[in-house]
Length: 228
Image 1: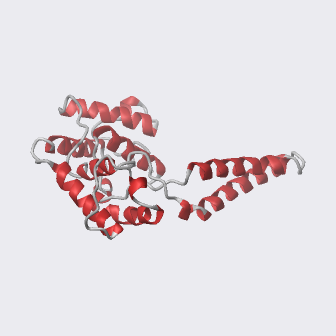
Image 2: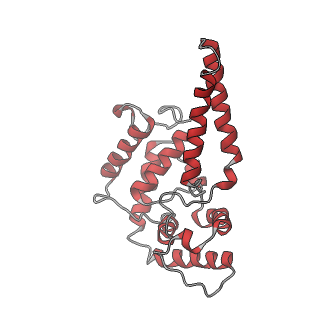
Image 3: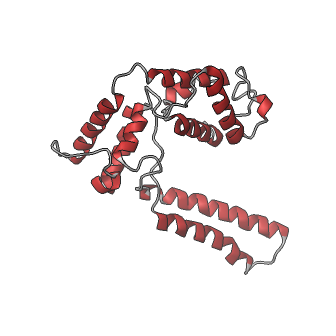
């Protein structure tokens, strides 16, 4: 799935408090498919008994195994970065897909490193332009070199991703993601088809940049809405 598709899925998940498993997202081909899936999770909230408790207990069991501490006390409000060190966070992120049925948002680089990378990549072409003459061909090569440098630095610092992403700060946040596999934790006030379709339509227009009248229930994401 391309970046547009990932952003769309994340926006839908955040809006309704659901988690769209990888195998499900690959089967959602039309807007109606997406609306139907969201409605299923919204209405499931009325039938599933206390999903938060079982989800938190599953997460706690996983964290205790990672820490090798069967008596570890864990509360939903506890911060992941407080309980788990960097290596344990990486282990948690490797195993979370089993609970989420999809890949969680990636761990982030520390803020200082992100800022440093931005400064280095932006300073690189400026430094080169101060040395080389300002010809169109030279400028093009300089910016291509800057892009290549950014890609190289991105690869070299992947192992330094240790900070929790937005929406995964506490164990309660992660529990909500796990609950979202089966029920919507943030259902809208109106849960009829038209109301949910209207919400999803607005998100699609915003994320994919398509015209409002293009988003109809039968519209196909790839063929009709240009989703890569």
